[in-house]
Image 1 (cartoon, rainbow, N blue to C red):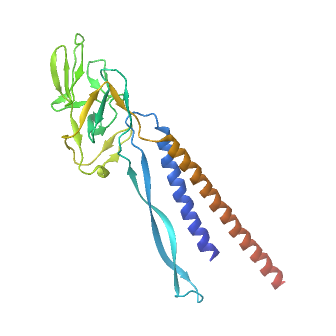
Image 2 (cartoon, rainbow, N blue to C red; image 1 turned 30 degrees about the vertical axis):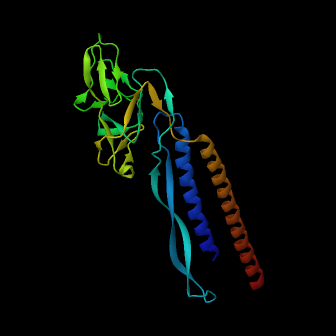
Image 3 (cartoon, helix red, strand yellow; image 1 turned 30 degrees about the horizontal axis):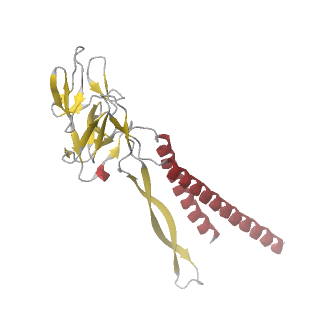
Length: 246
């Protein structure tokens, strides 16, 4: 029975460690533009392996903790007015589309810039996609404007429209590094509005994350203390058994 208790405790500690890793990543990106926090879904795993004649039934189910999935918190972050013409926030559930070496990816981070060749790119250098392809600006072009429907214009006229997509089920999206998402079935945005001169902040709450980290740390320490007591019980039992046999 002590062995079963220790295995159950270990499963809980593994789950807490996994949760702490996710929270640490959330905290590390608390100032990352457009970052979406993550959370862990846990489930009870029943394992009827304990058997003893003193149980009401012959088998006694054991409840273990198992991390089932990682879910994204797609709620909007706060909007910050930057006044920068190349900063764009999305008011709604849409995503920007960018072209990466691995294919098209999606992001809420609208901090854009012009490359040395005049291409509109994100902070990682990935070209920002329009409905008809990339955006190319000449050295003489000034006065870049982005309307609410994503239409991009400059002193040279209309340059195209941002490719803004929405997803029927955002849980199909998977992280692809550098604040990007992949997968899902992108649909043309119908309810998302572009806001030039704004950025969307991370939706991670530092206060909530810190409170959860304290709670998880205390829970982990409590389980460690319980495991130590089980070890002490086992050691005492072995010592007493040895003394009785002597």
